[in-house]
Image 1 (cartoon, rainbow, N blue to C red):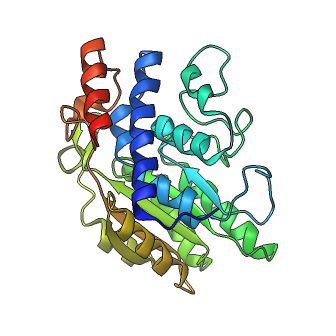
Image 2: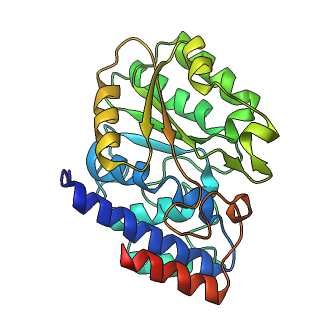
Length: 274
């Protein structure tokens, strides 16, 4: 299943935004801002780019995704559900006691999840291990890893980057969700990691840049990334935290809180107009 129609992909992304608000509101907890910023990235990966089969989620030759910024699980769950890994109706159980849809992805509970994540900074290390294992086992697949821009303040990220370059993991593609905000404020103020592109280049990555909310640009950049040989790829996606909901956009306070009834109704109304 590969969707090439831009409008159809945009509709999937907008449905995901509605699901995110519904999930977080229903649970009265979660991370809407961080989820809304990576919607188009996940949409293009799962509906255009990745070789996956919801009917065979453990297929050996599948492409894999590590959502290192695991707190963006509401977006992840919506995309997995829309892609057919589990019923969309299951989304209403987000963060409920006994639910498969934990606050952070759990590989043991949910089909389609390739790594339990949420402890920030660890995802790229796991993705490197997956990519190296694929090379040793001569499996021709791609490993994708989504990192938050605040998350790359973790030192382990750069140890993993060094590893990826050393082993020439050209089957590894790292995506930075560069929304410029983290829980305590602007990343540039909390711990400035700029210039991100120069840092990854210095670690031996091929660096590409993209508007993280443009479906067309994302398709093009992922296609370009697949052509890179001999070194890993880092895609820096410029995004907006809280994208699509006017009062959440570019607001650090929406990193991890649920909307009130009035805010929920306003958000849904805005998204249904799209």
